Length: 255
Picture 1 (cartoon, one colour):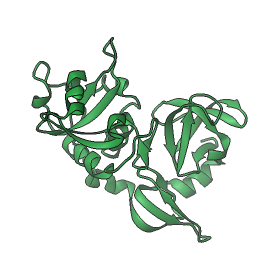
Picture 2 (picture 1 turned 180 degrees about the horizontal axis):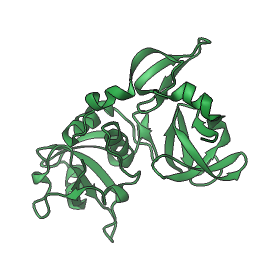
Picture 3 (picture 1 turned 180 degrees about the vertical axis):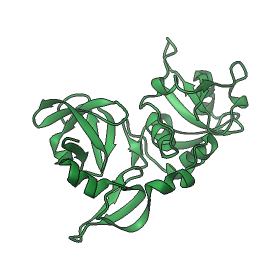
Picture 4 (picture 1 turned 90 degrees about the vertical axis):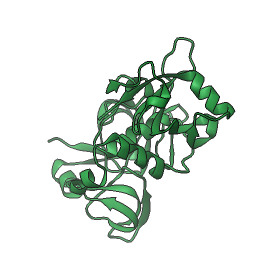
């Protein structure tokens, strides 16, 4: 194994162009490895573990030899939102999904050993729906975000299902191609907890939004129209709920 490039910051933005003011496409989290694709110092075009590419400033990354990487991160715990302290006494917060290297102590919050993840987050859509509802409560909308510190609709879905061992693409339009179609011709009322509902505000019907079904015509999602996290009852006269109903296109079940 050659040297690896590891995210050193709690959250590192992945930008559309090699400049700080460009659009944030996604994020990578502490402890995760990225692949260098192109070098325009001090910016690198990198590929994250889900295959997504964008520009990241070199300052967000640390280069480690294979042995040092294994020493720090082999068997790393998964943060569920915690504050850690390093051997020198420095403290920092880590978001949901970051990796907690072995030498860090968890002061508050929670971090899970990798072998305990399947029991804590079973591979079941209904369990993923419960995680979306609980773990992202209160999250503000942030384009390109993937954590409860700020996320967009597809960032929530990818992060939540990833905790449950179900790998999904980063963008809603690509997530809409995974799994199996459900409730064709029967509408949202026929969907089960954990199904993914897809919406479009485009004339061509291209998917622009995703939400996680909670059941009984109820969704949890991150929507800019709500400023972020919302539990949506679609069988109400609420104006935004009616708008979502008009934009509904299809649903998928991923397991």
